Amino acid sequence: MSPASASAAAIARNLATVQERIAEATARANRPAGSVTLVAVSKTHPAESVAAALAAGQVLFGENRVQEAAAKFPSLRPDWPGLRLHLIGALQTNKARDAVRVADVVESLDRPRLAAALAEAMAKEGRRPEVLVQVNVGEEPQKAGIPPGETDAFLRACLEEHGLPVRGLMCIPPAESDPRRHFAWLAERAARHGLPVVSMGMSGDFEAAIACGATHVRVGSAIFGARG
Image (cartoon, rainbow, N blue to C red; front, side):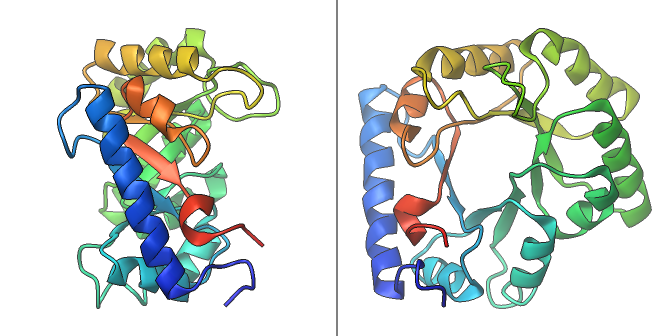
């Protein structure tokens, strides 16, 4: 196990703490109990850490890289049939077929070429993982994502032209600004399109995301420890 990864006991304690914080933030926002889902981000942490989280009751995980996910998760699935995997990192078009094979949800659909590649891969593999459209809410040049002003047209193309199973939106707001206006925008845009999933908020800001309408929060270091 990586020295940066927490022990199994620490992972169980951390999970309980994060779940409690999610429940408290949900209650403060006057939202129904259980309406926010935790995606435990296990990127760079070993399969042993994932197994520890599974043993503690967590079944939904997030990974950045297809190769890492493919090496880590297939061996765990037979013993944990409820396990679900979200790919949350930038995805190259030439990895679309691998993503379709390993993931239950692809959260980082961010450009037309990737939409076409995912549609083609789903047709070839006979498997249709759900997808979320990533929006570059802060319009930061170094970040992936559809610009906010192009979101509506891109969603229509994904659904009508490519027939993709789009379930919601995802974002990573600028680190240096108050994320709440970006979170509120994403939740409103998802609601406008009748999309049920709003994936936003990480270890440092997930409570603010819940207050703004997140349905899924992606938490890694608060559960597994610092990444190596």
